[in-house]
Amino acid sequence: MTLRLGLIFSTTGSYAALGQGALAGALGAIEALKDTVEIEPSICDPGGDVTRYESMASELLDDGVRHIVGAITSWSRKEMIPVLERKDGLLWYPCPYEGFECNDHVVYLGAAPNHHVVPAIDWIADSGMRSAYLVGSNYVWGWETLRLARDRLQAAGVEIVGERYVPLGSTEHAHVVEEIVATGADCVCNSLIGPSNSTFLRDLMARDPARRGRDGHVVSFNQTEADLDTLGSAADGLLSAGAFFEEDADPALVDAAARFAPNARVSAFLASAYAAVEIFAAAARTAGTDAPRKVFAAASAHPHLTAMGEMRIDPVMRHAALAPRLALAKDGAFRVIDRAPATIPADPYLAHQRQADRPRRPNLKVVT
Amino acid sequence: MTQFPLHNFAGLTALVLHRSEEPVRRVVERCDRLGIRAIPHTGDLDLGTAEQADMIILDIDTGHDGQLPWDAGRAPVPLIGLIGSESPGRLAWALGQGVDAYLPLSALGNLFSALVIAHETFARKTQRSEQDRDVARQRAGRLDVIRAVLALMPDCGDEALALKQLRAMAMVEQISLEDAAARLLTERQPSRMGG
View 1: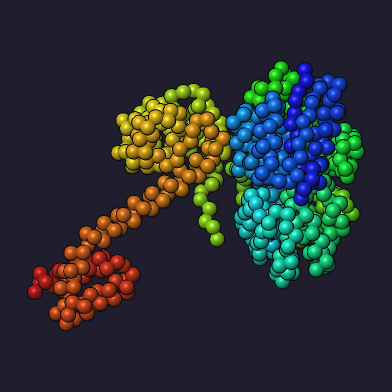
View 2 (view 1 turned 180 degrees about the horizontal axis):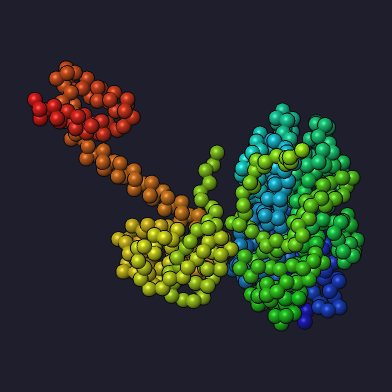
C-alpha cells in the first residue's frame, strides 16, 4: 500500500535550518524505506509564518492526508492542533518542547523537559556555578523552559541575576548582553532560537571574550547541529541538553543528512523526524490502515527499533521515552559528556521529578 | 513575580465517581501518569472516605445530591466534573454542587488543566468563606463596640475619644476593634459585678 504523509516544516524563514534538518530526516527515512513501503510525501513550507501552518495542515487533511510530520516551534504545533482535531489527523512532532501538553492528535517524539531542562540545570548546580542569567525568545518555549529552569536553579541555591525575553526573530539584544556583563552571571540559560540565538551568542562573546571556551557558561535546552555552524566559535563551551547528538549517528542518519540536509549535519531534529517516519510506516503496516487511532495504537503497542535506537511511545501520554544526553560544543561539533544508560519515559508535566536535593554537601572524605 | 497555582499533584489521591468502566480506566491511567493515585468508587459516598481523598472526579451525567455526603456546595475537597451530556439540567446540578472545574470526557488530555483550575478555585473559595466568616463576626461585634465606647466615655470625656482609646487598645494588642471591645467588656465585667 502507498502511505501518504504530509511534511510541514519551515525550510525558509527565521528558523529555516531547523526545518531543513527535520525535513531531511523525514525524506531520508522515506528513501531508506522505499523497498518495504511506499510513502508519498506532500511537502509544505510555511516560511516561518505561524499563520500558515493551520491552513496548510487543513488543505492536506482535506486532500486525504491523515498523518503529518511537522512543526518546529510549539507555537506552530498549537496552531495546527484545532484543525487536526476537527479533521481527524495525527501530527508526529519531532522536536524538543517545553512539556505541559498531551493532545490526542499528536505524538511527541522530541525531548520533554525531564530530558532537557532537568539534566541541564542539575549539571549547572553540580558544576559549582552560583549565579545564572535567563534569556529566551518571547513565546511559550522561552517562557516555560526558563520558568522551569528558574524554579530548579533557585531550589539548588543558584541565584537568578536577570531574566529577559526578546521577540521571536529579533536581533536587538544589546541590553541583554550588557546586563549579563554587568551582573557577571556565571551561567546564561539560553532559550533563544534562530537568528536571535546566533547573533546573541556572537555579540556576547565579542563583548565578554573572557567567557569563551569556559565549559557551560551558556546552557541551551535545544541547541543542535542543525544550526551550530551559524554560531561559529561563539558556541565553544556551550552546553546543550537533548535526546540525540551527531556523534551517536548511525550510517542511515549520516546518509540522510548527506543526501537531504543542505548542511549535511545530523541533529536531533533530523534523527527524530527520521524515527517518526520509521514508526509511522511500521505502525501503519501493522494496523493495515492509515486511520490515525489505529496507527497510534499500533505505534504505542510495543517499542520500535529506529535509527535513534529502540523507542517506546507511552499509549496514555503519547510521548517517546528517550535517553537524555549532555554535550559540549567545541570547534563546530558537540561532544557528549553525559549519556543516560537507558531511555527514560517522558514526564511532560514533571509529576515524577524529585527536586534537586541541593545545595549538595561538599564531597569530603576523612583523611587519616 | 507571578504566583503559580498548585501544579504538581504527585502523591495525591483522587476518588473517581463514575459508573462506566471505560471512562474510569482512562481517568485512572492518566492520573497515574500525573503521579495521582486514583481510586474508582461506585455507589453513595461516606464523608470519611471523601475527606481522606485530595480531590473527587465525578460524572455529572449521573451525579445526584444523595450520592454526596454534604450539603450542596459544601464539598470538603476540590470537585472535577466530567461532562458527558450537556443538558442544562445536569449542568445546573453541577453548578449547584459548586463543582470547581469541568472537563468534557472527550478532552481527557486536558485533565491537568482541570486539576490546576479545580484546586485553585477550591482554595479561593475556602479563603472567601473565611473572609465571609470574618465579616459576619465583625458585624456581630458592632454592639460590643458601642457598649465598649459607652463604658470608656466616663474616663475619656466624649464618644470620639472613647473610640480612639478603643482603637489604640486594638492596635497595641494587634486584634480587631470588635475583639478589643469584647475583651474590654469581659475584663470590666467582674468589677462592675463587684461594685
